[in-house]
Every structure is written in C-alpha cells, then in structure tokens.
Length: 407
Image (cartoon, rainbow, N blue to C red; front, side):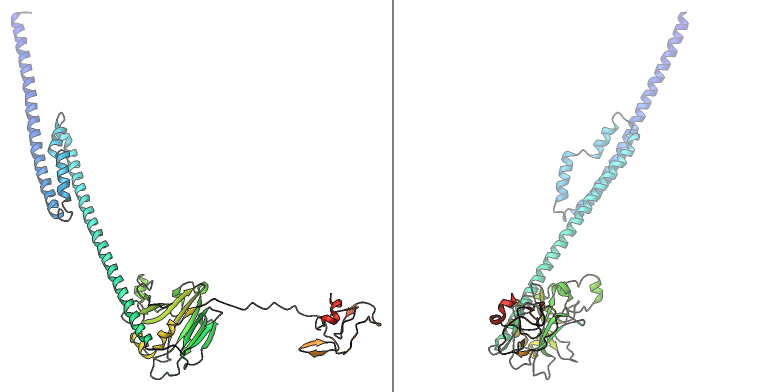
C-alpha cells in the first residue's frame, strides 16, 4: 500500500472516531439535560405534595393530639424523600421509563394520607358517639333513680295516713296469694278464665263510696306464664300511643317505667301522660313461679281521665297503695282430685232399708245360711249376705256379721 493511500485511510478513520465520540458526548449531554429537567419537575411535585400535606397537618394535627407531628418525625428519619428515591431509580436507568413509578408513588402517598385522615375522623366520631351515649345513659339512670325515690316517698306518705289494722284478708290457696282490703268495702267479686279475658283468675275489690270518683277499686288478675308467654301479653300492659314509633322499634320495652317502690313486694309500672310511646297508666306487677300477678286500679264505667294517674289515684283511691303493700305470695295448696268411682252395673237389691244413706239388710236378726231354692252361687238381692251369695255392690255389709263372707 502506498504512503499516500495509507494517510488517506488514517484520516478517514480519525474523522469516523471523532464523529462517534461527538455523537456519544452529544447523547450524554442530552441525557444529563433530560435528567435535570425531570429532577426539576420532581422537585415541583415534591413541593406541591409538601403543601398538600401541610394543609392536612394544619387541619388534623390538633384533632389527633400531635399524632401527625410524631408521624412526620418518624417519616423524615426513616423514609427517603421522593427526590432521593427518584434519583436512585434514575441512576443507570432512563428516567422516562420511571414516570409511571413516580405517578404510582405519588398516588399511593395520597391514598395513605387519605386513609389516615379518614381513620382519624372515624375514630374521633366514634369517641364522640360513645361519650354522648354514656352521658345519656348516666342522665337516664339519674332520672330513673330520682323518679323511684319521688314515687317511693309519695306512696309512703299516703300509706302513713291510712291504717290497715282492721282490714279484712282475702286469700287464694289455689293461686297462691293473699291481700288485705278495707272492711267497709264490698265483698270480693271473683271471675275465672273466659275467651274474653286472658287472666286465669281475677278478683275485684270495690269501694262502697264511688261518688265523684274516677277510680273505685282494684283488680288482682292472675295470668299463666305458659299462656301469655310474657308480661306484654297481659291485659294491663299499656296501649301504644304512637304506632310509628313502635314500627321503628323505639317502643319495644318499658325500660325506665318499671320502678322499685320502697319495700313493696311488687314492681310499679308507671307511665306519665307526657310519654311519647304509651298511654298513661299505673299498676303493680309480681312474677312468682308459673304466674304473673297484676294489681291494677279499676276505673268507673264511663269515666274519662286525662290527668296523671299517680296524682288522680292518690287523691281518689289512696287505699290502693296501702292494699298493694299488703299483697303477699303464699304456697299454692290444691285439694287432691277424688278418685273416680267405678260404675256399678249390678242390679239394685229387691228389698233393703236405708241407714245413714246406705242400703242394709232390713231383717233384724238375719242369720246367714245357704239358700234352699238356688244351690248355685248367686247375687245377693236383699243386702242380707249368705254363704252362697255374691255381695251386691249397692249394699253395705257389717264386717262384724258378714266379714267372713266378704273375703
């Protein structure tokens, strides 16, 4: 190869390598510029996120009691910033390929912040509800205790004004209770179970003085638990005033209306006229064994009362409260049923006399002997038993005289 040709080839190679190096440098510069633009863009994103979290921090930090500050300190100490994470991902990689990752990281960060924000609000709301509920329950308990104490004091005052020393006593061994009632009242009126009445047994005590009174006495109604199933199945259970509240499940029980009254054996059921669910009512109830005993005042036929039953009964029938205090459950005692007597199919004797309601032999000096007419054993038809006769079931035989023939 000539020297001129060789120099020409060397020049050509140098130009190629220079162009190659220039191209690589240009690509490197473009890559660095692109990376710098992306870093600036990520810095802007990071700044916007910081502003976003700053707003959340400002609005929730007080509610969470400094929780965000603590979380931020932990985050800053242990978690890399988005900028550092982006630089690590961009090292040795094309940043254009990591744009999706940046979007995902940003979205996850926003989602986590929203979850923490929602949880904080939810927890705070639950705490407020629990606190309100506890406060409501405390207020209700205090109100119930005050009402029980007030009723107990009022009833005790009424009792102290009435003497029960000479009162009559009514007792039912069959249904297991006894009670006293004023001696100048009418005799108790008893009614038993019927289709129109749910009670197995009811006894009414009525005053003789019924003028200008809406309440004239009281009933004791006895219900079988097996029949009515529960207290709400009794006739005295208050009628619903607001059917819509009942449909909404707000009038299912008498909670707050069942009161313990002093030393009474029965619980007082009292509903004031201002109650939203039930009509006004006042009566007492005892559950003992298999029975529910309801003691309720009797309203006169045709009487209309829109007043508080506690006030009206206290004024017109104070004996009611004194009578309830005398109520007592006793042991149930019922006579044993008589055994069923077998039906007598034998014919009645032809001759006899009746002594003390029994058929006996009418012969004064009867001497048992065998019959001459009938040699076979046969039924006695005279109540005078012989050795060859069967005893007649209609007759009575003296064991001293006929004992050996009765075996």
